[in-house]
Amino acid sequence: MKKVLVLEDETNIRSFVVINLKRAGYEAIEAGTGEEALEQLKQNPDTKVALLDIMLPDMDGFEVCRRIRASNTQIGIIMLTARTQEMDKVTGLMTGADDYVTKPFSPAELTARIDALYRRTGGVVAEDTGEISQPPFLLNTRNRTLEKSGQRVKLTQVEYAIVKLFMDNPGKALSREEILDTVWGRDYFGELKIVDVNIRRLRIKIEDDPTNPTYINTVWGYGYKWGG
Ligand code: CA
Figure 1: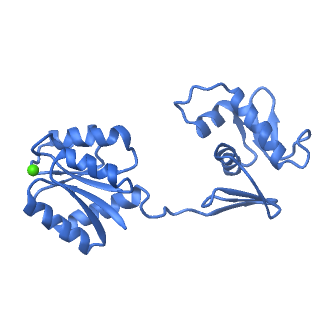
Figure 2: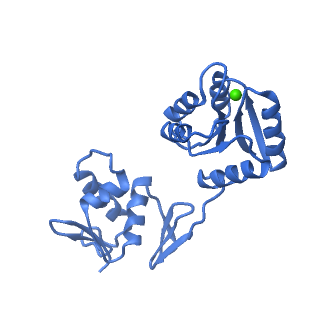
Figure 3: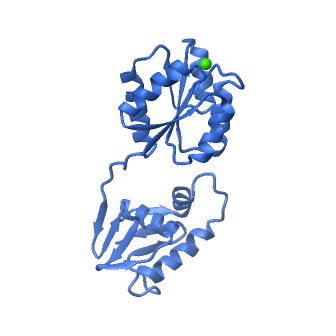
């Protein structure tokens, strides 16, 4: 079930939103205060989108947004604002909201925004090419698996990410920094050596002769290259 949290203290507006969400195929999780909303999310961690009213009895919607974001980067957040000042929109986006809808809004407008956010937050399987075939290798990007000549090669998530990077860039020399940034992330302050260690392990798994590699080639003083 596609769960959407509705945080709104005015019961008539909340019922209106909930009825329309149900009609659009969503399951609504209701809350009338900020505290209730945070509690509901704790109990429903599979909630993909949250609608947050701003004027609430216990704390404002921006604060709720900030608290949700502190532990959840995946959920989509839409602010429901009665006011139209740019300030509200900016504040909302600064606290981590993805979108905002100004009251009064039509049910169609609201569900369209939720649908869009739902797709973006991965509620629906994102479009994917599915497979990268470079014989003897076949990489399945949906299942994150690798086959060599039809045989499954068991990879860690990091090894998978390295192979994916190589297969996306066949024949291109990739620096160790580039590999580190792409696979471990830019905010990872590890040593470049971790790249070499993973490459060494990967070679044992995929090369016919790991001491004389032909798939992952060393580019001396720089990095690695996939294939010739
Ligand atoms: Ca309110």
